[in-house]
Image 1 (cartoon, rainbow, N blue to C red):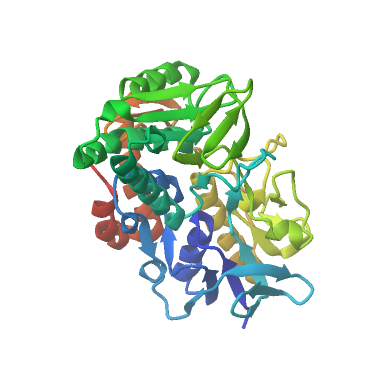
Image 2 (image 1 turned 90 degrees about the horizontal axis):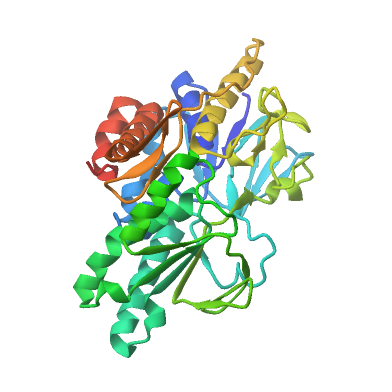
Length: 393
């Protein structure tokens, strides 16, 4: 029997697994947890909107076939000569591999940034950020040091802005519970570029800035982080920001395993693939999601977004089955549904099918996208079971 292995249960890996499961094709998916978490919603867990459990889906709740096997293990390498994936607890032989281990934080060589900041890399780290902030505020109650109430967010892309929006909604509640004046809280988002949210239409950015500023946030563009030491962000020009909480959201790169295994990669460590999402180095390996260096017909790389990852995973599984059945494979031609950015639970910005939206309309669209994803992943059963805990309308 052909051995099919999927590594990683992110958006791409789960889409591939769901496709093979529905086809009744046996496979093994290896992931470091027995659940799939929604990466695009981790800012909600970090910002206090809901408990971490709201943003996870047990993998076995998606996979219905007895032939669909889940193994919980931490992948540490790939041996292409032996055709095995290496984990901390064992090795997993494959005839075909779908690789979707995703990303790690990119620190751009900024001295001390990795060692002295927090980052939203998974569900545990998101929950850890919320707990860290809560502990800092409790420390302020004991010693009155205002540094505990200062939060420095590095990067004004999607994650940084969405996290800021969540915090500015949650922190007044936290302050009230601890009898801290919210006026003492300082939440800064520090961005080296002259603008925020490059993926959002330019005319919507002033609305974002106004919304966050009215809630008490500070957006600092054209401000470069030069170094981070314990509790201190050092800026270009010599200014320092002393903060009890420092969170980096400024960039990602592919998991380094592809580079370590000798795959052809780009400057962000993503493995080069052809139009069918097969590795340029091995046509028995499909690389999907944020790990894939995939380009459109004009040679422009596809952006590392959840919707791209989901479509890649489904197509990789389709093309793998096509290979097994000696049928033609399909090229990756994704559909762009748009980009949505929440600014808390009640307002947002973005575009839907190319139409710019903002305010409550964007917030409702963001909430609706949660139900849409659950439906695509597991149909009415999963959407019915999980939508209520994730949505806030």
